[in-house]
Length: 432
Image 1 (tube, helix red, strand yellow):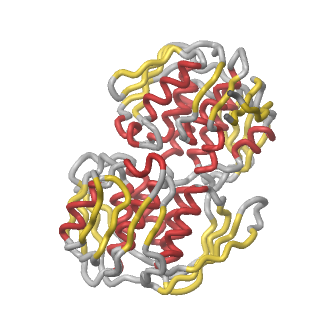
Image 2 (cartoon, rainbow, N blue to C red):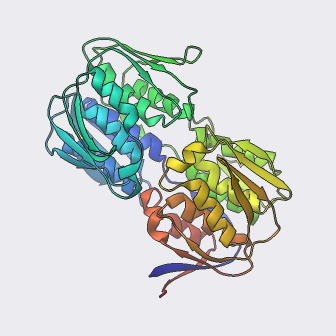
C-alpha cells in the first residue's frame, strides 16, 4: 500500500492559493451555455474540474486547454452555441457532486436521453431532491435504489418549483443555471432553512457576469428566474479558493507565519468566514500587501455553527484539537453526505493522532491539547480529511503516515508541492 510519511516540522512561507473550484465550475457551465467564445483563466485542473469539462464537452461544448500566465495553471477557451446538443449520452461525473447536480438540469435543455454516472461515494450521494422537479416537467428518470447511474429523457419546463434547501444548495444552483434559457418565467421556492446560502449567491453572481439576471428574495426564501434569456460570452479570471486557504491559515497559526496570496478579500465564498473564525480562536490573522498572513498564536476553543460552511469542519477540528479548552463544531448533519461521512472520519482520524475528540449527534466535541501524538491515518478517500491530517502533523510528537494521500487530487493537485514549499518533510513509502 502506497503511503505518505510526514515528519512533524514547522510550516512557514507563502502560498499562491489555487483558484476557487466552486467559481470555476460555475464559470465553465455559464460559458458553455453562452453563444460564442469565452476565456476562463487561472484554472487548476483538479479531478472535479475535469469532470465538469468532460460533461460540458459531452453536451456539445468545446474546450481548448491553454497555458495560463499563472505558473502551473490553465486558461480554458470555451466555445458554446447557446444550446445543448448531446454528443455523448453517457456522462461520468467522477466523484464530483457539483458536476452531477449542475449537469442534470442543464442536460434537460434538450429532449435527448443522457445517462449520468459517477464513481466512489458519489454513486450513493443523495439525488432524490430532483425527482419531484423532474416529475413536474414530465422528465422520465431511471435509477436503482436512488443511486447512480441515472438516465434522463425529456425537456425541462418553465414553472414554479419547490426545492429543499437543507440537503445541498447544488440542486438549487443546477436549476438556476438551466431555467433562464426556457421559454417562460420560473420561480424556485426554498421550502426549508437554506444551508450554504453563499453558494447560491455565487451562482447568481456568475450568471450576472455572463449576462443572465436572477433575483434572490431572501426574506421570502424564493428565487425569481425570468425566461427567454441568453448567456453572453465573456472572459473571467478565477479568484483564489478560501476553503483551500483555510488549511494554510491553520498551519500559520499553529506554526507559521504563512501568507496566502490570490484571495479576494471581498469574496462571496462562504468559507471566507475562516478568517473571522480563526480570529475568534485567538489567531493572529491580518492583511498585508494583498496577502492574508497567519502567525503562530495561542489558540482557544470556541463553539462554531458550520451549517453555512460545512467544508471548514475538518480543519476547524484540527485547530480545536490543539487549542486551549473546549471546541464545539455544531450543526454538521450535511457532513455525513460528503465524500465520506466527515463527522465519523474526522473523529476517527484525529482520534488516531491523539486528539480528545468525539461525536455527539451531528456535532463534534473536542478538548484541546498542546500537542498530539501522531500515528497512522486513513484518507477515507476524502481530500479534506487528508489535508487536515497533514496540517495536524505540524503539532504531532511522532511521524504521521497517511494512506490514500492522493485523494487531494480531487480538488487540490498541487497540495503536496505547496506543503513541501512551506517546509513540510514528507516521503512516499510502501506498507504491507
